[in-house]
Structures are given as C-alpha cells and as structure tokens.
Length: 308
Image 1 (cartoon, rainbow, N blue to C red):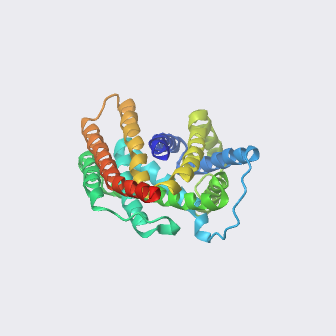
Image 2: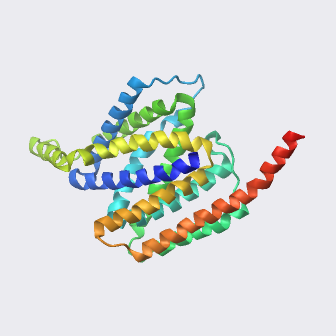
Image 3: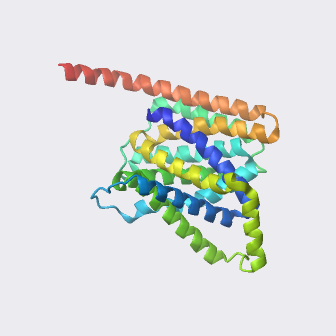
C-alpha cells in the first residue's frame, strides 16, 4: 500500500512546485513563501481541531524540529529550478539530489532509521535512472548554476521528509506537520526581517495585495494545501519503506506529471524529456524487480523456519 501511495505523492509534489513557482512569479518569492506557510499552518491547525493526536512520551532531540527550516530553502530552490529549467528537467535533477541523499541515509541509518545497505543488485537500476536524467539535461554548461540549485531542490526535501517522518513517529503525523509549518513560518519571517524587502511603503504593500488577489484562490491557497497533503502523506510513508525506494517511487509520479505539465505549458511534448523519463522509469522497474528477486529467497526461508 505504501509503495502504491508514493507515486501519487510524487505527482502532488510536482503540482505543488508548479503552483508555488507560478505564484512566486506574480507576488515575489518571499511573499509567496510567507503565504504558503500561513495557509499550510491554518489548514493543519484546522485538521487538528477535528482529529486529536496524542504525542508519545519519547525524548525528542532539537534537530527533529528543523524540518520546517529546511523546508523553506526547499521552497526557494524549487521555485528557482522550476522557473529556470522547466518542470520535467527540474524534477529530474531533484531526483538525482534526493537519490544521493536517500542512499546515504539508508546506508548509515540516518537519524535512527532502519539501515538498508546499498546492494550490488541496485546498481543497474540506479545507473539507468541517472542515464535518464542525463538524457534530459541537454546543454548542461549553460544551465550549470540552475542545475546546482535543482540538485539542492531534491536533496533538501529528502532531508525534510526524513526529519518530519521521524518526528511524526514521536509526536503524531499531523502534530509534526504543524510543527513543520510553524518552524517554516518563523524562518520565513526571520529571512524577511533580515533582507528587509522594500514593501514598507503603503503603495508597495497595496501592490503586493493586489497581485495576490489577481493570482486567484488556486494559486494563493494551492501551495499551502498541497504542502500539507505532501508532508502528512510522507510522514506516513517514509518510516515504513527504505528512503531510496521511497525516492524512486516518488519520482515516478513526479517525472510523469512534470512531462505532462511542460506539455500543457508549451503545447507540445519534448521528445528528449520523454525518452529520458522512459529510461529513468525503466531503471526504477529494473531496481524493483531485482530487489524482489533478492528478498524472495529470504522470505521463503523465514516461512520455512517458522513452519518448522
């Protein structure tokens, strides 16, 4: 069930990033980030009024509360990558960054997670996935700065997912989501206070409000609402499967949705991106099949031992 849910979460992530990027283009990055976190905090707080959660009496280190802080930089990097590279290319680079992080997290048991050592059987699938990304790249030299941001836009949410999912095990899924948005909102406010953008005059403030109103309810509310869906769903899925498997499954939904969004925006499908996505998805399939072949004998042995 969790493996089937992960691609759907990936599709929502791509829609969320596209909505956030469009909203940012209308009102600015700082304003859009502030609105996203206010809306998200309001939505999850309303959910907690209806659904009560009891926190487990477990000591929680401070770094489990940093998911929202990391998430703010995820929003910034995703907005820039989507606007500079397009949805499917940004998603592809995000996968590469998140893959590297997830492999390291699985191998080391990062933040107390169960260890999933990298197996030789996984290498063909990983290689095909990376080849799919390379096919999408095109002229990488001209896009080098944006590509680095694209890599970060994948690694940062991977880190956020791990932190939030581990906090969710201790505090409850929705409570940890609310903590995520509180931390993100405070971080955004601190950034605005440090940067001091020129919105202090009444004229500029009115202009920002008009821009937000012109964006429409879908762009204003969409990023915050889909963000709550993503964070909550990830809190369910990530503790239950390997981070690397979750990353690949998430991306299968992200990649397909990214190609569709680009086609809607441009009015045509990009052949190179379709081929790259196909190769990447083939890599995911190979990795999944080889992993099942590896675990099947162990499962049969466990059943034999239990019957004896």
